[in-house]
Length: 108
Image (cartoon, rainbow, N blue to C red; front, side, top):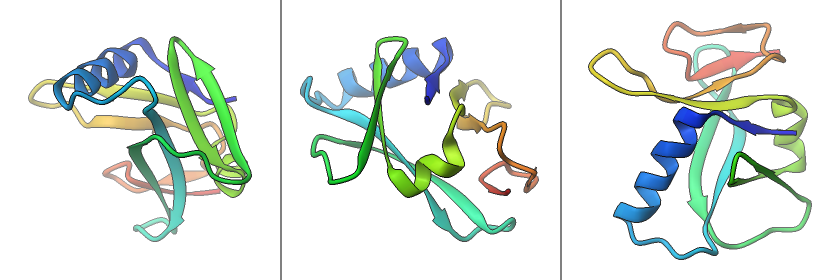
């Protein structure tokens, strides 16, 4: 399962409204090679399902990931931190053994 914190839900709703995205759009998250620690998170809005997509609905938000990424993201919570010292969207990933200082990459 992938989870969405209230803070992320509110920010996602703001973005969808600002960009006038249709109801068919969802949040797509994935893991790619790269970054200081070896793996990086990627997040975007999408409206097309792909083969082997894993689909989750939590807190009123649909989150989709590919099967390979889900192996790294299982039980991860998407969160958002705003303000002057906020880091924007970030992933609270219990599978990450370590992450870089900026929090944009991790290792298992």
